[in-house]
Image (cartoon, rainbow, N blue to C red; front, side, top):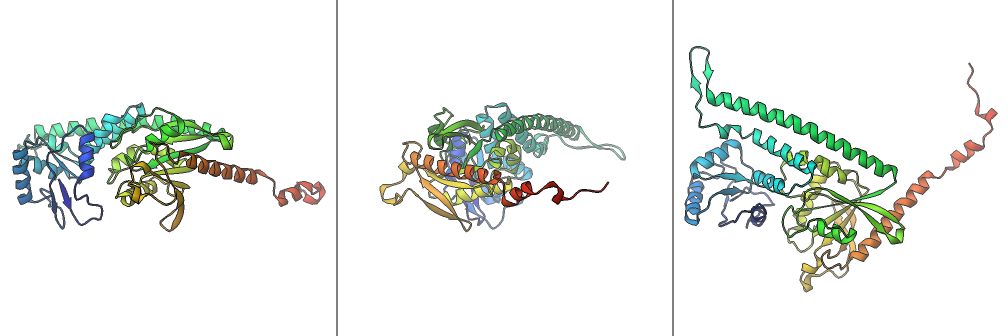
Length: 388
């Protein structure tokens, strides 16, 4: 179910929501959209549309209703009562996928923290069947109120413990990053919209076996490997990060700060774009939005327009290497296919140039300046002394 509120990125065919549902193991049976100037405060879609959804769900035998937008706790509760079916929103669907895909200890902690934060706002739904009871003068409450308070306290304690464990993992990652800095390692991070082919490109570059599939959020945990660039006669550190998506819940952005930190600390970002997608401009904007939120918007980038093999012959670019203007800045762009290997050699050459230019800049910065040389040659008696 999608509601067009006049926003530019509305998915009229709910394709991305359908892919998210399939990734979570669900089978979409019907897609319904409507237009509204503003969400209904009680049911988000209004009573008339809610009746239509209920009839359609009964006709198709649906067992759950998904909304492409985030629902408030009250709207979700009211819809479940009206439709007599479980109702979930885009936020919970993404959380479920993340919970299924997380493999590392850090990834599981991040998902658990986001899930607990989301659940803390939904407690009223779990105990709405327990009425608040009135007693004598000055007494108000009942089993429902007490249970909500108990659950809220338990969730608050769980959030605190999870954050402490996650902070410990962050400190460990920071130690690893400091070691890479001491080794003078050039750090490259792959970023991009989910299902743009980051993991496939990562595997093609470093000959790794990271999980890659044609689905949203195929991988969540950051993987780092060494990439040897023969022409530069040195190795660089290459990291594959979690994919971004439209309307990524803020709780997940906060929870995945440790994973996204690889992008913040990178010397170069390879922004992987699905060149075959007609929505790639909007997808790029979502990536830049998240990069801005984590403070990685000023890191040098190379745009990697992937899936060249999926572009129709008549739409293939005349040249595989050029520049692309983003927010008034010309950024190097390269077309390739991580699946077939076309264009990978050109990307390696571009990386060699970037690594070489950084090494030259570092060497220039370490050379003594003319003022340093003059100061070194100045006799001690001309420098002056400090009177005791």
